[in-house]
Structure formats: structure tokens, C-alpha cells
Amino acid sequence: MNKIILIGRIGKDPEHRVSASGMGMTTLSLATSDRVKDKASGEYKEEADWHRVLVFGKTADFARDHIRKGDLVSADGKMKYSKYQDKATGQDRTMSQVIANSLQLLTKSPRNEDPKPIASGKPVWSAPSAFDDSDIPF
Image (tube, rainbow, N blue to C red; front, side, top):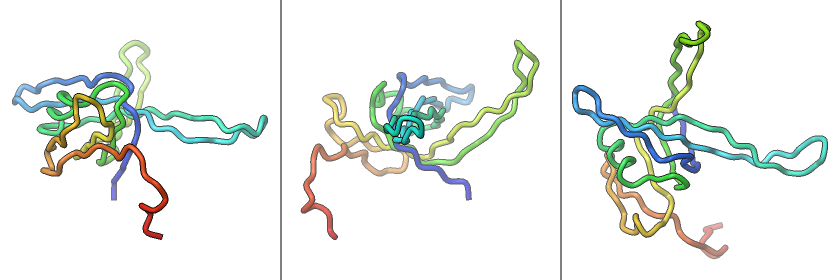
């Protein structure tokens, strides 16, 4: 099974294009991070990984209209690897990207206070601003 779920921040505003057939395609740059302990100093540091995320159709239109740099987003989809030849050097290269079939905007901001429907028909809800331990069922 090829399935990936990423939660991270958008690194730059989405890039939207329309194919010759009229289908929208949006590319997102998504950063995920992890805290890692440095072996030499013993201190914890943040390590970021960048992911290229592609969405199509109504999900692409949603991304174009509602997602901006800095937003917290969840992307659900599959990994795809493509091989190509670098025109400048002639070397073979491999590119990895996530083909997302759904996105959820997790950031609450003035421009997205109301839930917005996406291609799957599910509304996108903003993340709760705060919670306390009594919200946890165990």
C-alpha cells in the first residue's frame, strides 16, 4: 500500500496551473519538522524536511483559493517517484512528490473562519485554539 499523511507548514504560496484539458493543478511546498537530540551537545534541535505536494481538480482550486504561506496543512495521498535527466549536467535525477487526494487547512485565520468544503465533500475545520487535559478520554 502506498499511503502518506503529512502535517506541516506551507513554505510559499501555492503555484496553480491549468492543463490543456482545463483541469487545475496546484503545487505546494510543505515543511514537516521533528525534534532530534544532537549527540555531540545533547541539545534538542528542530530538523525540517521539505515535501513537494501536488493536488488536482477541486482540491487544487481549494488550495489556490484558501492556502497561503505559513498555513498549517494536513495532506493525505501517495508517494510518486519520477526520473528525469538534468538538462544542465546530463545526469539522471529522481524527484519525489506526494500526490494528495485530500487537504485539510488546520490554520485558523481571518480569511478562513468558516469551514470550507473540499473535493471529498468533507468540511475543513480549524484546529482548536486550546484544550485542557479534561478533553482527553483516558
